[in-house]
Image (cartoon, rainbow, N blue to C red; front, side, top):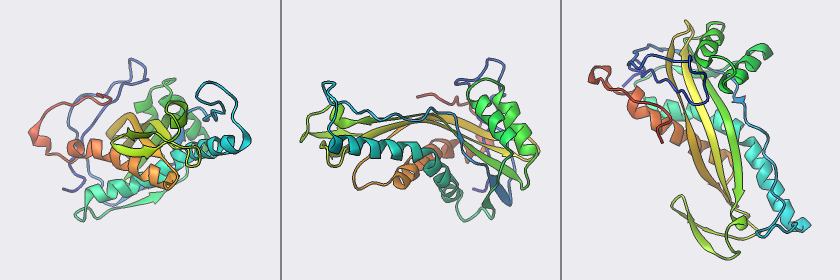
Amino acid sequence: MPLTTLLLVACAHRAPAHDTIAWDLNPGVVEQEVRVAPVIVAAEAPHADLTGIVGEPLRDERAEGRLRRTAQVAELPHALHAAVPGALNAALGSEWSGHFRDTRLPVSDVIALTNAVRGESVLSETLSEVARDCEGDAVLFTWILETEGRPLTDHHLVGELVIQNGVPVLVDHDSEPYAVQAHVGMALVATDGEILFRYQDHYEELLVADNSVDSLGRRMAKDLVGDIVPLWLDDPASGGVWVADSR
């Protein structure tokens, strides 16, 4: 189904009480070009955990693995941002004839969006204002509110095989597997200011030795898009109301 049946979704998490959008299905038309705005990183920079399972300081060789994983977690917002357009394009399928194109934003707009996703101003209004100044038919926004990387060696014995997110993982210091959590959001806003959809939620994925941060970003983007696809590609005539951040 083409992008003519978009669901308007309002998300009140971390937003002021007056930042509300009507709970209605909102058909919108984006037939050609979607501009992809830079990712808005409102999360604090991750800090490396350099203590062991009982609080002991880690030796240099063990600390190196933690530092490497922390650097990857810091790169996650950009990996996710790069993967979201592809995930959306795959969801739209061959019936949609449009395309995605990166765009830049003035520093003032980036600051305004960062403040808005943190709840310091009205996000819906800020998204609309920024989109009105962009070219194309619509603007795709992504933002990161929180990122956290948790080393499995802090909670499990070395050599233990644990099941994390349904995946068996061997806990050791060589691979230093991390459970990565992120609170992320996205919105598609027409360049006339109309919000076509808006959504945010928490996601958790694994970062292990044979897994790059780009792969992690693709999996998280697929989960994010997969949560909204059944809704904003559904038939508006079917009715119904759905509230974001319902997990």
